[in-house]
Image (cartoon, rainbow, N blue to C red; front, side, top):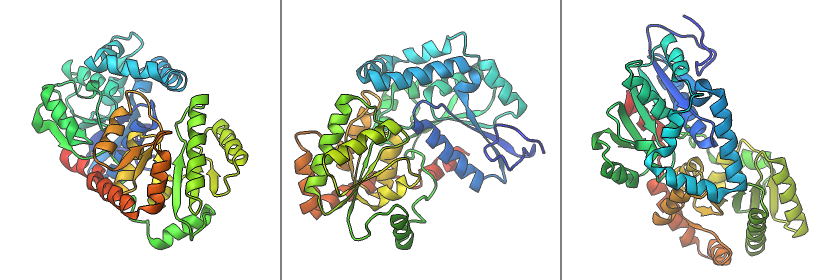
Length: 394
């Protein structure tokens, strides 16, 4: 047996008698990486007797120049010009962006092929459309002969996700609506499998009453209070966004005085400072500010509702737990479909300055409102999404 830097579990070695699965991702937003990691984790824990599991940042390996460019462009546009990002997202629906990526001289598919040659893949899983196109190109050239599967990580997919190809074996989708669109666009219905967005397998199993009490103690949360969590992760620090967050928190903390409000700043130190100023200035005594925490899932689980930006993974986790989602803001284009999915299925609401007071009063005074949203969320949640993907792929 031999070692390989792309093995998911570094404590294991390659067994030439096993088949090879490559789980691939790009670091443009956390969702693609998290989906890939959930799949790789499941394979490692449940299928490692039969498969070597490899974990590869595909674009970084193909070209560090292009990877840096896309990471920087993605981050800067979302921070400084989200409308421009939304426009580009919509314009590129016809596959233009994928075509540009394919033709970049810096993007060397031979580098990816070199990785595959060391341990030829039996299965490749792509969690980003750029990767799908690279792998399809390799297969068209006869460089690989593996099954290629696509995992879509937003509830209304950009068309570049599912450009029809005879070289793609499976498309794993998070919503039935996407299936209808894909069939219209010429994708073989038999290749489309509704699974949900990949989540850590059975991650709620440990959420016993005793465990949740321990987490409340760890985070210094008042045990007798109902909890609301307000996530600021992934929100850019602009004056407009900070005004929105401040207005939300003022209304939430005032109307829901008897609740414990947990505000999560994420890893951004400047966001933490700004939130600290907002909370102190407005004397929000029932708001507890936490920076980055590994207990995000637990907070979602114990919350009456979650106020958040609707990233695909965040939405999937909330739905799987039956936690209603109050959408605070979204990335134009990319997350608009997630907003529609939540609203169409009545699993939450989009919160603005006109309706936030009404929503807070309903949270406080109408238990049936929360119960109905929670029931609707569970109805479209997929706690076993990752297991379904693997069962339908191998």
